[in-house]
Length: 216
Image 1 (cartoon, helix red, strand yellow):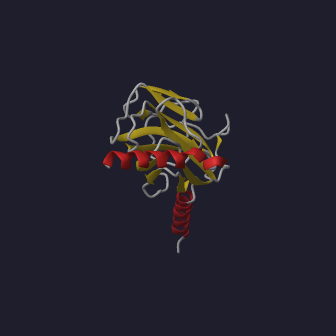
Image 2 (cartoon, rainbow, N blue to C red):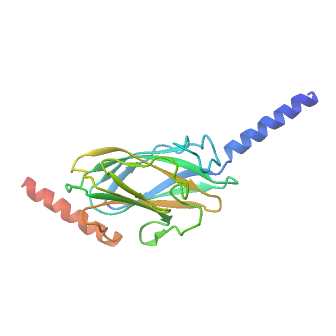
Image 3 (cartoon, rainbow, N blue to C red):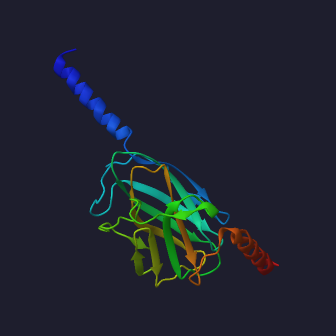
C-alpha cells in the first residue's frame, strides 16, 4: 500500500473512532408505578461536543409517549459515555393525560438516581437545561408561562384535559463528561405539589377504584 493511501485510511479510521466512541447518551431505563413510557432507540449524536449550539440541536432523543394514569413523578435515567466535551441534546416528548384529572402545570428536574434515591443536579456540575446560554427553543404544550432554570423547568398557565395527548414538549439538555448516568424527573400537578414516590401506589389504587365505581 502506498504511503498516502495508508495515511488516508488512518485518517478515516480516526474519524470513525471519534464518532463511534464520542460522549453520548447510550441507553435508558425508567422507574414509575403510575405510567408507561415509550422511548425511541438511542442513536449516536450527529454532532457530538456541540455545547452552546444555537437553535435546535440535531442530536435528538425522542420519547413518543408517557401515559400518566396517576399524579406523580416519572424518572427516566439515561446512561452516558465520555466524549472529551459537552454534547447538547434536543429532547422531544409526547405526553398523555390518562389520569382523569385536568393538569394545571408541569415540571421537570435534572438529577441522579431514581425513586427515593433521586437527588437533584447541583449548580455548576455541567448537567443542565442549556444553561447559562439558553439559546435553544423550549416549548411545553399548552402552557404559556415557562420558567427555565439551570436544573428545572416549570410550566404554568395552561390546561391538559383528561384523555388528551400533548405532542410535543421540546427542551435541550447539556450532557457533560464525567458522569455515567443522569435522570430526568417530571410530573404534572393539579395543586402545585407532587406526591412522594411511596404514595403513588395508593393514588393509583384510588383512581382505579373510582373508575370501577363509575362503571358499576
